[in-house]
Length: 141
Image 1: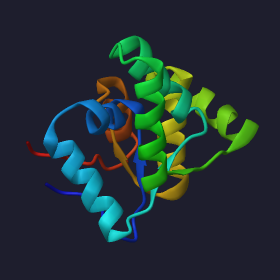
Image 2: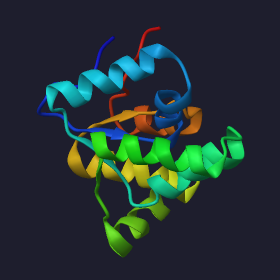
Image 3: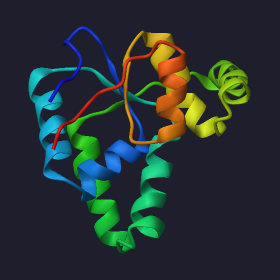
């Protein structure tokens, strides 16, 4: 598995977080390594709602269990980096340029802003990150 050096922040998107919360062991291991090594993991402000929605509606996990998973995940990290209206304005331009949703573009905007890597399984976001020179976190299972 490869991931950022401690000085390079990782921007975590909901697709990757869902793998940590419900998927393959390799993603949980990556998350554990980041937490254990002190790597800064950042998410945009909408992240928690997006992951909650994916747990409840996408994965069909009952609300009480979804809430407990979110609580455990939140206790271990990541940090919310809310760029406010300026971040959304920047994300709008990125969304238009790369044909992303604004939600996806907010992850890209954050990674560009902090000169970080993106941990995502989202193909359009991955393509946009590569086109923008943002490194992708790779996890080998």
